[in-house]
Image (cartoon, rainbow, N blue to C red):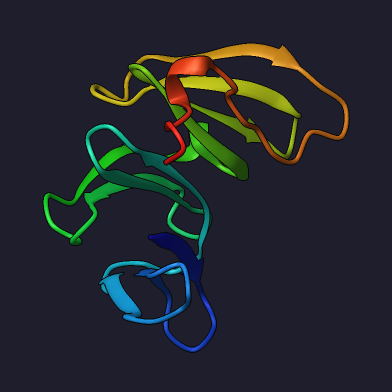
Length: 133
């Protein structure tokens, strides 16, 4: 599956097959400008940043079990999003801080480092890679 965001005429999070077929909206309400997106491949969750609503939210692959991880001024201007173990990692585009957010309680937000010109973030770890067939 391929997951992506769109905030043109109607903001949404979508999924489709890798050939572009079976396109499905999984989030299309209470959403304004979804940008960064990250997948929890093990538990089959989709996380996204909404830069207009200053929020990070999550749903399962079918668009169910939606809830807000964190919302408010402390996470304004986020770009890039990655998930690894209990945390989400993102970049604050205002001050270029790399942030770590506990994805289960949303109250544990830590600034880890500052990187000039950071716009995206990825976690590379052997356990996050799926085995090829």
